[in-house]
Length: 364
Image (cartoon, rainbow, N blue to C red; front, side):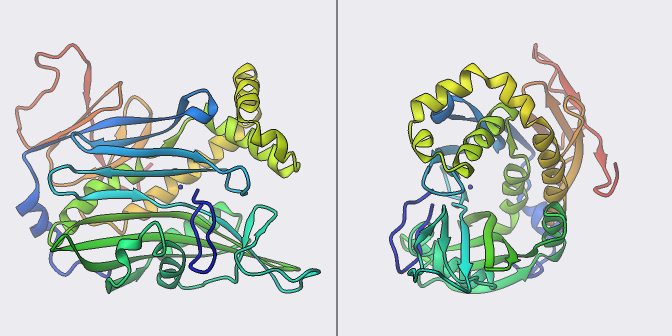
């Protein structure tokens, strides 16, 4: 949960067109091969089960994880950074939050107040202003004083997110690129943020739907963006964790806050009834997964240097960096990309690797 600049709150998961040809950038920077491994993020708050998984480039290092904040309506957030050790380039998942703004208050409340689990704050329609107000004071404090060099609205992504809300909400999505100095070196950073607004008779409910940042030493961000996009677009919540989260959220909505704060009892309840809870929320999980696939595809349309493949084990699309002739996957969810025409990862390996065919991103 992040903090507005005025009030200290508990912490709780853009670019115009490229200035040069993406093809030229990829030709210069594409390594002869690349491997992605599956990162499984466990949640100690729910019996250490898998909460979410990603594809990350081999050798990149994750830090952070799932944190729970029972006083807020977004009860758990992924606070994680995934870093390339040699250059310091990183993907960072930023905290999400729900907000409420009341046009009529029975009792006056100060902005920043926790109102039924939401932060009381007037809607901020501009993404760059929102980043400045809510991320720079803490999560992105290194961007204080940074220079905005580009901003791009992402209308297709916003439309797909609005679709997931049944068309009843307005959505704004953008990416903002910054330049700044760190440790005597110039850096670039793109912050991606999607905000959702829903008007009701007493005011506005609004929230951070997604937010994350890609950063790299200046001159490297464009070529690394397709790689980083693979991590973001491959995020998958586990159905068991999703069911557990929705169960706890139901307790919150029923105003059973004392039960939520008893983390050990909640974890034990979820463990005893995990299959029943999973079935209870299975339809919701399926709908969310299908929606997330569409949203990831819409986002990838803005990222030059990305190809879409179909994972033959899962039957789902996956976005991987372009510039490679060969793409293979195994049952563990590991991927290998290569430009070697004779490359076959099955040679000398007991793991079965299957070659993937590139597909039209608009295809089935």
